[in-house]
Length: 170
Length: 409
Image (cartoon, rainbow over all chains, first blue to last red; front, top):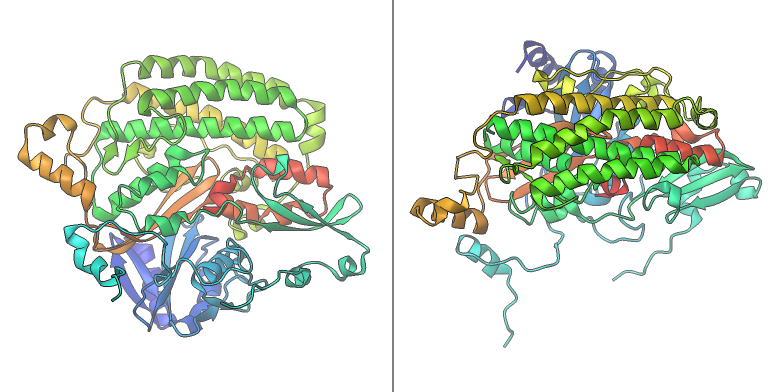
């Protein structure tokens, strides 16, 4: 991890009440949702991260609080840095503020996440489904949404599958 | 079951002006089946005569649930789904996914495999640009370029077939290396291609670059500033045509790109013509990279010998008990990846192609997400297209070079 990125992540954690995790040599800042917009503005204007490279979400079902993480990846071309950020979201009526007003490119990414995970983005200008049909029910990338075919049963996952295998009824 | 909700214009009412509701302007569907939208893209246009006042893209017609399906497959088996996202950059998709898997599990790749990966990725970049060149020239009524561009694209596809047995969905790059070594005919075939290609690029340029009809259709059309382009997330030629120097191969070199000498073409105009010039020059730079890679192509193994992650060669399975066990374990259970997440970006022909990969300690990816360049580049289309004629919008769509399989995944 570069010295500069180290300093930036430390500052972000201190200023916005976050904490730091690290994996494979890359730090991620975990921020609370209520600080998100202020942090995004700070990241763009003061820290010089011009590009919101990637935005996605992960579902940790059956965990409930937090059930989701929304993941942001910022790139600073001028300072030659990348920054990972994660925002935990609870499972009950999940909603976080939008960053579309800061990074326009978040528009479709937030629509996709709303479509696939059912996370609402407060203040989004046009929160409709993006990829699935408008009358679709459910949010396909949630972990409790079935994929729709049977998984082969091997010794290593025998018990896991046996539990949910339909058995003949008496 | 709740009732099926009817989708009406009320849903998009906030996106169009009041004039459209009074009937002063016209709402027109362009697509999803339209030859110039390069796939199944639907654009809802608000028109004042021929002038585009507003353009609302509607995507998702090619959504195949790649990310959800990959969660149900082991790391190796999930790879075949990546070819099918951006079907113009199949090798590049495999490349990105394999880099992500290798970063997640900490797997090394032998030198020869790294160089082979670069050669094939650049070859795919050239063939993708050739398809873009042909089809986008066709959009502005230059018919003959299409035929010439597809002639050379055949040559690149033949080379891909030579090394992998497949023309498009190669899955040649695998976690830990490549599938197998290239055949002896590979090098002469590639050299033939390298000899002929520079002259062919000059030919395309002779047909288009100073052609007054082409200039009329492209100069000053679909202009976007660098500031806007980056805020809307555009990458690739859409960004470099607007003067911002961002190429992942230079920004964060992977697979040894720092060892090659090449330029990143830049233009500042930000219009359709600038994007055209950037891509033409990129093809020349790709040829330069392939030249250098071919000269330095080292001998040696093409796959990692870490059999916990990479299947052992067929010849060893007959004689070694361990190899047989590894083979069996890898193709039934797969390998376990640690709990954690990585993000790896590469430069696809269209821009930054990122793979977010999260493991949960088991043999299947917990979450895979592809940050696809077409997805973000298509978002910029309303910014570029508003205020132009419908016919110019066709030229702009061509210049952004979207692949709908890449947008919808």
